[in-house]
Length: 491
Image 1 (cartoon, rainbow, N blue to C red):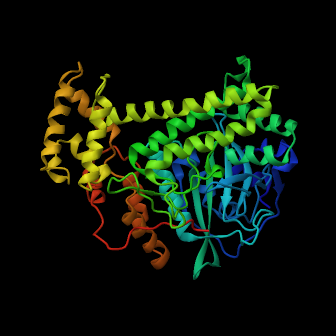
Image 2 (cartoon, rainbow, N blue to C red):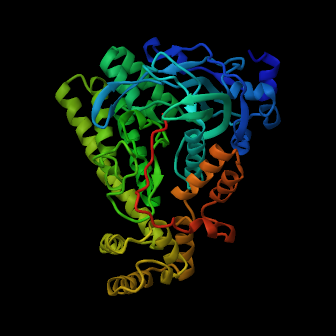
Image 3 (tube, one colour):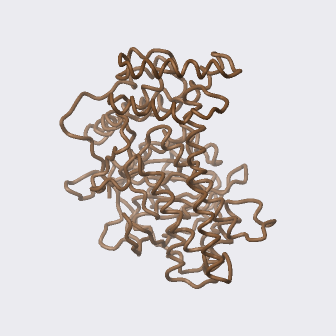
């Protein structure tokens, strides 16, 4: 165990509000120690914001915590129970390989979950070993930090340690544990679990806890649970719009991977789209494209409908009235999402005001991009800096006509051309974590023990709107291949 004075030196300041919820929602855990942990990555800026001591975290005491070998004073390790619709089918789930240490209270009095992923078996592991291999943990570190830098709500990665042990998947792989942080790990699936197996009082307790933890202003609402539903809908509408605006494909939008806080979670088979195509899907297990890029907004609405169903007993005593309230709220999601997406797309094109034909203008550009197999990120980057000669859309009559319409559209707003350029520059990232660059970094780390490639990648991804010379080499596309890029859950 980590001693109390060591906990103070490390900066841990835990509370355990989740452990005060109904016992059905979690199982307390014993440690699953590993042989010889070694710290590979520490997110120093995140650690500082959490109130942690960077140098002490790098010490043996800090590494033992990240490895699940020692528990800080005040922590209460537990695995959370939840359920979920996986590819449309309901199933019992739970944290099979994750351990929530507790909630760090930061110097700004924020409450942040500290969770170890890959820390060993839990009561929800079923047949799994509860462990994780190094590659997927490094992938989540890269992707979550890239999303954070892009300004997209997300859980974040604090540290990665290797365990000194192997895990067996298709082959023998080096084991690792990821320490991740989140506003909470409350999910749509958490509510589904209580709705299925708990009492109405359990559900009310969970809903009240969620309101207090994430949503201010509910005290003044006549129906706090309808307020909860609408607030979750708002956050998810904005989140998924932000995914679409940078070409992010989550890959496994099951209801257990939709957070109530509106943060992106679960970076298993995720990837960023190169060539623009709404049908793009990377996940090896998504055979029918349920979670393809173009389907993400629709699936978001479907998941929210499942969330609304869990709240029906709390919305109104009369079931028909409860259903009517839920349906009205969920129906509003589509417009909310579309408005966020439309505003974001206009910003990507330097448009400040509103005209009736804006949506047609955007749609026509996307159509040209799809027909010409244009790269999503680089096309908007080229438009930002007026270098369309470098893109696949250049040269066609259709694009020339569109470009003329776009310039005429910009001329009809009061803002200057320079202002439009700055809006585009701040809305169109220079770089994303290109799939081939991520794989390059992971291969170097896992196969050769060389973490320098990943360090350089993380550095350029940390400020994606800088448009710096250093980022230029990371904007290039992968070499053509007959084999489509595939991602895996990494279990």
